[in-house]
Length: 126
Image (cartoon, helix red, strand yellow):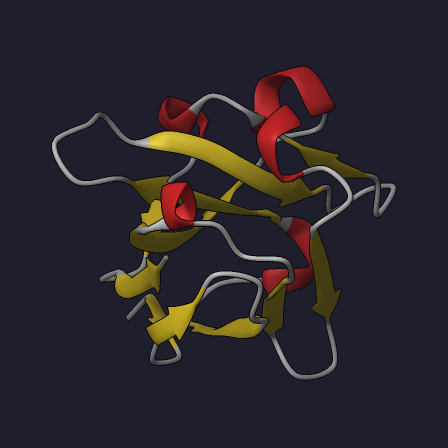
């Protein structure tokens, strides 16, 4: 049984930092690219960051470059998203996802991900 379980998000103030984690089970974690997506209120789901399984290359959407860091620990089947200098526009439900993606370009497309977590709310107040 595949599971992706995100850690709790939370309510933070602008400028604060927050770390999300996602623990995976039920599939071969080391052979899957891991991604983070988010759905802001009233908007479509959007790509945030990904880390490729084959090269450990990281990919970020422009709005989070320099503020967010994605990392993975294949020994613990865990992917993390370190978020710093948070802004109100980062408010969203954050999802981790797993897919057999081999390129940075493809890592941005949510349809390339097979497995999804349930999502965790992150709210950034101004």
